[in-house]
View (tube, rainbow, N blue to C red):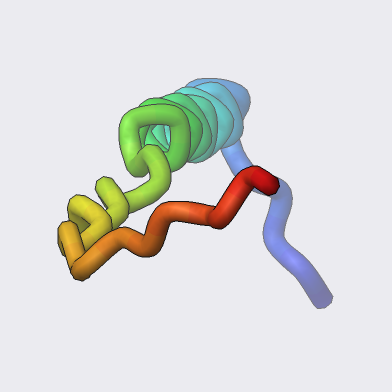
Length: 50
């Protein structure tokens, strides 16, 4: 049979889960997309406008 948990223990587990959730959300929000490389400047061609 399952033992009954104390109220303080349930609050402690809930608080710990909330802290982990907030930390995960903060890490996910700060993990933005990586910066793209600068495009390499290659030779440019000029279109003939006749």
